[in-house]
Amino acid sequence: MAAPSSELFRFVLGAVAGHRLRSSLSVLGVGIGVAAVVLLSSLGEGTRQYIVSQFSQFGTNLMAINPGKVKTMGIPGVFGGTTHQLTPEDAGSLRRLPGVDAMIPVAMGQGRVEFGGRGRSVYIYGVNHELPRVWGVGTAQGSFLPPLDSGRRASLTVLGPKLAREIFGTASPLGQRVRIGSESLVVIGVMEPKGQLLGFDLDDTAYIPVGTAMGLFNLSELQEIDLLASSSEGIPALVAQVRAALMARHRGEEDFTITTQTEMLDVFGRVIGIVTLAVTAIAGISLVVGAVGILTVMWISVHERTAEIGLLRALGVEGSTVQALFLLEAILLAAGGGVAGLAFGLLVQALLRLIVPGLPLATPPEAVVAALVMTLGVGAAAGVLPARKAASLDPIEALRAE
Image 1 (cartoon, helix red, strand yellow):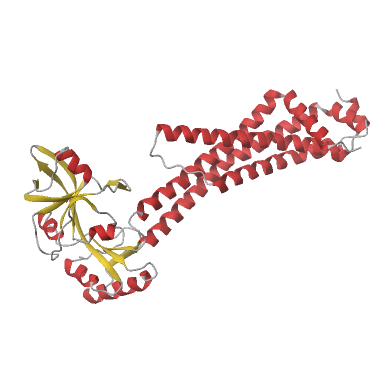
Image 2: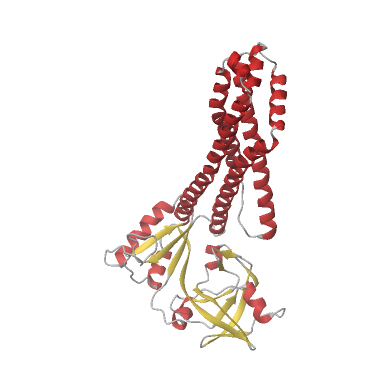
């Protein structure tokens, strides 16, 4: 005799409610696993989105050339890299290449910007007039640096908005002279807010001509040359042109490293993806622990309810129906744990956003679906053996059990 689905479900609910403590522990075990999977995958996805947004604010047509050829590690000049100079003349030759829309020679250092008894130690960027175009930022007040030859010095500076606010307060800094090291420079502009890039506050900085920076910090080379390609489709061809042009200027040696924005995003994406997968797999171990808990509970349940199973069989309930009862009970426990774990994980995320507003968290929908599907699979797998054992019991022997 096969029972209707509604009766099966009511019977299972009664069995679960009749053993509240045991059922609660099973739900808790699965719920912890699901919550861990959701939280860790959200942290990984949030970190990936944060890094992508940080780099994407400069556009996707940007490429950077650094001195030193990377051989073993991803850092120019470190662990196997050979460092050679990149000069302003190198930068000028690259600017003339077809497909280059704009170029920035970069020479930087740390210095104290002072005015009227106030001072602040910040990063000083030696650049040229094309920085707003390449980095995608404009001036909020005044103007940016004028076009100058890379080797020419000029007593001009443009301040980041935070630096200007800290030193000048609400007063306008335009036309005022600030001191950076041994240089007295006229403030000709204040930048628009740009925010942070991987911990570097681009609003708390000063920009000066690259020639001035090289003299101020006693530099004989550039730390970087940034190029803005005319189009993203032309980047591979432009990389080949840049490589050929620099090798011709460097005695045929490829003593530099070219990195495109797309390559950086791809590398970060792969690294974050691997880390997310690893930590999610570790969190998934708790789901296995939850499965073992359900298996144990169901096995004990079969043993304790042997007489009940015998009575059901004696009343004409088929073995397949008994098997379905115990299998459904295991799935119900797992599903309850999955829903509870998901709700708890989302609640913790909401609290973390309130406590730590800058923490990157983003729940990927596929992770939620995967966690719930995995939970149901865990419940089914944990209930198969106990359900089969219950279905295989001899009705007469089961009725004799106490």
